[in-house]
Image (cartoon, rainbow, N blue to C red; front, side):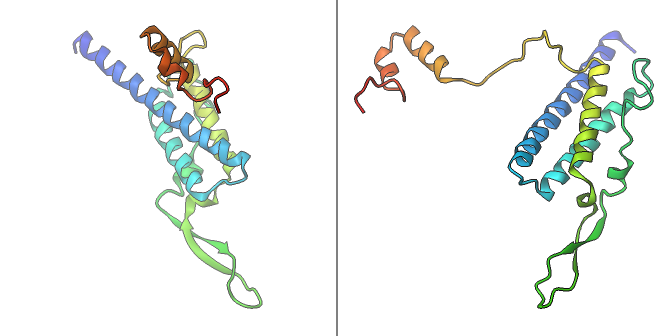
Length: 174
């Protein structure tokens, strides 16, 4: 095998892992927002479970690396065992006098939110241990444009009138 082919494979693997990490972080951010608002949904639980399985699949290829201990990459069998299956979960009864009713739901819905978050954190730690996590010294690319960026651009281009028309820039005319 040629060296350039190996390098290309390494680059693809690193990109795949990086993409999966970004997706995991995205889902964890939404998870935290919903938890703070006490609005965690079953859909969120399903999303995080899928992202965990996808991350686990790529990271488990590195299970034999010397920097990884046996318990660094978590056992996700509780998640895997529930994928593609349904279970009956208690549901509020519309019948008079109560009584227990059940409805079919994806079996992943049985998993505890905090268990899922813990597994996600373990995968992040394993990724960092393997060297796939960006260093704290690395500059993270930010492609979001802020109002200050817009002001600077307009001033550089000599468009000071346009700067005055930005929200919050009007000097007492309101």
